[in-house]
Image 1: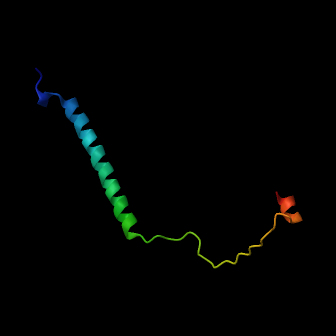
Image 2 (image 1 turned 180 degrees about the vertical axis):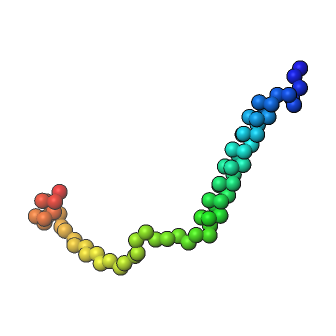
Image 3 (image 1 turned 90 degrees about the horizontal axis):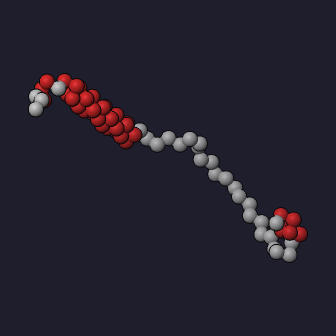
Length: 67
């Protein structure tokens, strides 16, 4: 049986995995905290708009040309 303390490469792999997990958790926490503090910004300002709706009968010539 090998002694666990003499297997330096196992400790190196474990340390690397632990550091990667720690970095991932830290980055996730920082992103979550920054997203929570920031107010949602609108990309385009909202302007009131007018919409006109015209009813078309099925007998209308405009309806037959559109379809």
